[in-house]
Image (cartoon, rainbow, N blue to C red; front, side, top):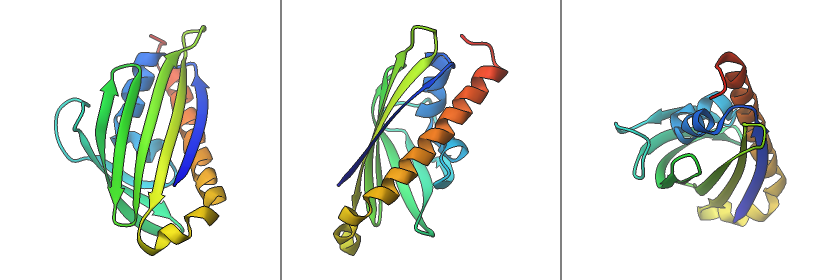
Length: 152
């Protein structure tokens, strides 16, 4: 098991920040490790919503299906991801900042399967870099959105 934990702050208010991040179809816009992300069902983002992501790891594309496991609108979303060689639980917490922006606390619990699980203890740095690049991309996209739309 590898647990990644990062925190960012953005001037974008909590409503738009939550709506954007909680819709995992947007992941390919902010996470450089996601080659594609699409919603595979219809309706609002809610518990049970499903997404198909093609995640790039070590030069290979790994298809994963993410499902919203918990959702407290404006406060928290938990997604569970499953692929043939990896599983993940992403916990994303949102809080308003004193300036009207949003603080995002992102934790990802990654587990490799099969023969790859033997290598997991040695991949901590690689996973840490993946997490840092993803959150840096999220930060850039949320900050960009804060400058192109009025803060609500």
